[in-house]
Length: 107
Length: 307
Image 1 (spheres, rainbow over the protein chains, first blue to last red):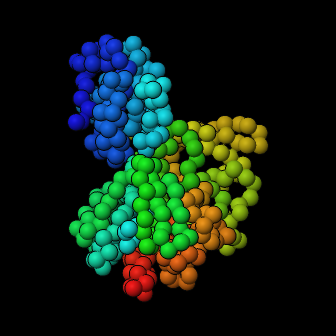
Image 2 (image 1 turned 30 degrees about the horizontal axis):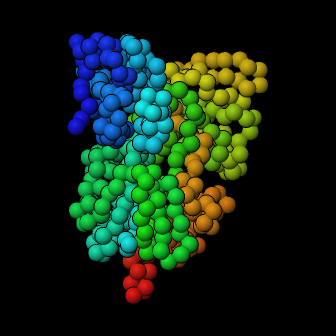
Image 3 (image 1 turned 60 degrees about the vertical axis):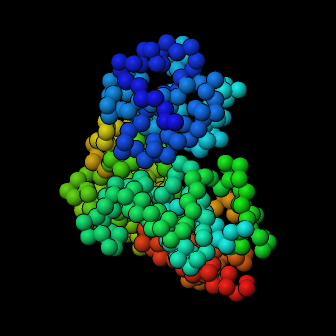
């Protein structure tokens, strides 16, 4: 199951107001590493659905969101908690590395 | 037990997959979970790969390589090899995903990573003004102002090569002398289009969406400067990805995997190596592809002698 696509219109409800931490995956169609990391994030989302939610923002479609959160390189994975970015992961990483980065949220 | 496991998914790995597949060996190719496709995934236009007169994008070319390997039965696994044990007749390959595989032969095609400066935005601007390959990308900098970073033979070679296209080439080096061979230095220093900037490091990359310039720091007096540039070529060396095997296989003095003559045979029987991980000199997609074919044929020959 692919991560939900989030837009400017739904960002407040889907990300900022979420009770659980939300990892926002900023990506683009032309970004190869983004496509490589996407299925890994889907797996993590499935395995840890009770602890964390994972959503996607397409930076081509939502440039304002990308700019608002200072995205200058993708893939960029920003973890939000209570409306704030609490963790930033830049660049594609293998699953074990991502799980380590997210250990504070999923363990 | 697999007949052959191929580690790596650049031109060498996939070509080995094509030839091993066609030899009926049912190869398993472990491609890397996030870097599958190798260095060409970071390139945009590829115009020097034979067979594509109109050119194509690096990722497109690698998709085609992969499709061809899969057509002939290569199983491509998007996982990372984290450990290998190559000494015995049964080779063991362990992945980050927690799997262990066994094979009679292994082909190492892990490539060599272009050494990066380590500056912020370097990856983002790669292919958009920042390049690591003059032969690949010099063509796109006709009449432009560019800089080459480095002090070895690669940097001299790249800077000299790029003067065929660029109107101006700055050669930026952090020391006050080059370590390049004399002849290469002379070529660069005598070239009217090349201006050397000594004792200087790049401290910042500038530009939105593409490179427009750099900030530099003079390492002797600490002064800083800003330069407008259309392109930046980083030629500070490359590091063959040998960490999996450096304690098991003989490496060359430059830390590449040593192979026997023009074959792909390493210091261990049943273990073959191909592509940039054995080649410090040529490092082109086509030479890597040729090398992958050699490895597949060597592996096939070795397997038929086992019977």
